[in-house]
Amino acid sequence: MNYTERINLAPSIDALEKLRVELLGKKSAISEGFSSLKNAAPNEKAKIAAALNLQKEELSNAIAARKAVLEREEFDVKASKEAIDVTLFDFSDLGGSLHPINRAMEEIVEYFLGMNFDLKTGPLVEDEFHNFEALNLPKHHPAREMQDTFYMNDGMALRTHTSNVQIHAMLSQKPPFKMIAPGAVFRRDYDLTHTPMFHQVEGLVVDEKGAISFANLKHILEDFLNSFFGDFSVRFRPSFFPFTEPSAEVDVGCVFCGSKGCRMCKNTGWLEVLGCGMVDPNVFKAVGYENVSGYAFGMGVERLATLKYRAGDLRSLYEGDLDLLERFR
Ligand code: PHE
Image (tube, rainbow, N blue to C red):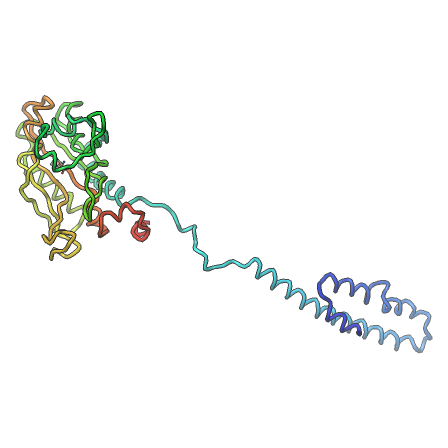
C-alpha cells in the first residue's frame, strides 16, 4: 500500500493524525531527508530539495483532503444524532385559559358591577329554609319538584338555585340594595341541555315600596342581554315562580337553527335563558321586610355561554373537549 492509499483508508481523524506525524513529523523520512540535505553534494541539493518538497506537498494535500472527508462524516453522524424533529408538537403553545363558563360568568358579573350591584356569594350546601321555605316554597309544594334536589343526610341539600343568596342578603342587611350572586347550583338532571351541576347568576334589587317596577326589571335585562349578545332577538314570556309575582321567563332566539326550530330549542325557535319577576310579598314577609318593593332574576350561565359561543351540547363544556376549550385561548 503506498502512502496515498494509506491516507485515503485512514478510518478516523485520530488515525489520520498519527499517519500525518509518521509521514511528515520530525522523525519522518521526509524530515530526515531535509536534515541530511547538508550532506548532499552541492550540485544535487536543489534537485533533492525539490523532490522532497513535492513529496511533502502531495502528502499534505492528500491528508487535508482525507481530513475534510472524515470531518464531513463525523458531522453527519453527529447531526443525525442531535437532530431536532421539527414535526414534534410545540408544548410551549399550550397556555391555559379561562373556561368558557368562568369567562361568561365574569362578563355577566362585570356588567352588573358596572350598574352598581354588590357582589355576594352564598353556601352551596343549604338548609331548606334558605333554599325553599323563605322563597315561598313550603314543604310538599309541588313546585319543589320543578328542581329535583340532591338531599344530604342531615336535612341539608345542594342548593338548587342561587336564589338562596337572596334570603341571606335580605336577612343580613337593610334595603335599599342591589346585589348579584354568581355560583354553582345542582339538580338531578342530565341531557342535551341539562347537567347535574351548572351555574346561575342571581340578581336582587330592593328599595322602598313603589320605587321598583317591572319596567325597571325589563329595562336592565334587555340592556344586559344586548350588551352580552349584541344583536339577538329577545322575548319576555309570562311564567310562574313561587318567589316572584308577576313572573316572566326570558327567551333568546335560537342561534343553532336561526329560530327555525331544532333539537336544541325543541323546535320552538327560542331558548330560555333566565327567570325573573317582582319579589313576592311572601318572601319579604319571611325575612321581615315591610313597605318595600323589588325585583329578582336568575340566569343560566351555561345557557348564555353556549348561545354566545355556539358550543352545542351543554355537556361538552364539562368533558374536557379540547377542540372547544382551545377556541378560548
Ligand atoms: N331560581 C329560578 C330558577 O332557578 C330563577 C329565578 C330567580 C326566577 C329569581 C325568578 C327570580 O329557575
